[in-house]
Image 1 (cartoon, rainbow, N blue to C red):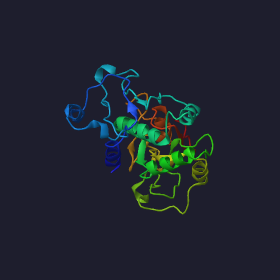
Image 2: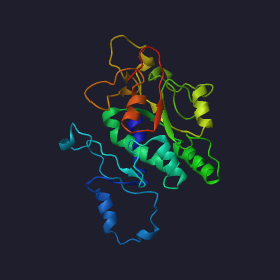
Image 3: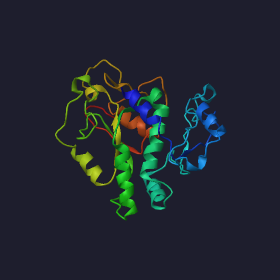
Image 4: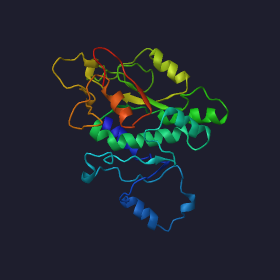
Length: 257
């Protein structure tokens, strides 16, 4: 279900991205380019995604998962302050950030598995933050910035809160965790839930860090053959791999990653 969710979103994202590396064009994009249809009426919010498949010759290098720019903005390793400046200058929107991070999640998910669930309302939230900005309302330095939280942090919305366990699937929390509520008030955009060690490392003394029944195995963003260490695995890995701007984890018993 998690992969299907990302696939569904991935099919309609990369609206504001432009490739920074050479790539093989999609067969559909080639057909579109050869079409005699009136391209002047094409929706500028949607564009074909550059090749996301890692190449064997780029193994053991930072080029294994090249990250495209986001509407002309260099998103890779960008700071929150840089994102805010770009949005203030009209170079970038919160919706574009969500689109670009979603493409990045789609690109890396099968390899590092940092995202457990994407928030189905993430585009609506980002759009609301953009509308506020246009009206001159900026809540603070996190306004319009996407973030994820570990799956044991409660969110009263369309996201699950399961600590990575199938046993809690479908359960409902009574309210947002206090920190989530404060981040929403600050204008941050909840992108989704991060993978983790099931029950925050309390499932067993003999299992792989970053594994949960619901989320599967999260892997290190720097070495795909090892686990990331610590229970807040997806939170740390997602930020390290530029899948999201910032993330929340929890400390239960050695959650450093």
